Image (cartoon, rainbow, N blue to C red; front, side, top):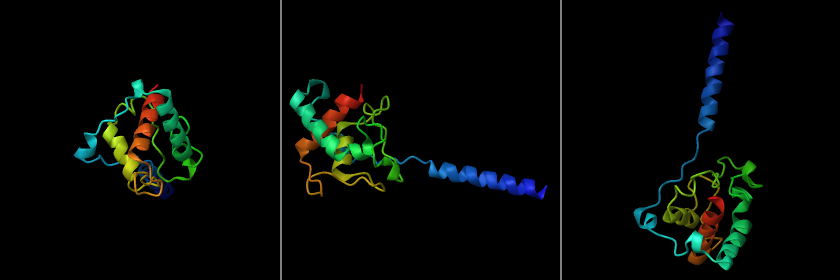
Length: 143
């Protein structure tokens, strides 16, 4: 009887610990002045040069964590405590405003390994480069 109680308590503790560890990170919502930003480059109207430039930046700076296909399974993702989002999941990109994506690129994602990539950061992406990456992501990961 005593062993059964101990095993039950251990089972509950294990269940609770896996639930806590499975918690998904949620990036905070960008401030209103960012949410109102709209990309100057429409993904469905982007020319080949713009998409190629966005792809080059994404492949060089983002794919290591976020994966070549945006699935969040890049070569470095396994080392991260909080896993990158699956941006290629149905509806993921459609559910994010341009300004939210821009804000994340600019500032990073708090409490994760993703640092900001915007002007003045170590990566120092220009506004134009950030919009090209967002355009590439929208054109590629929403298919």
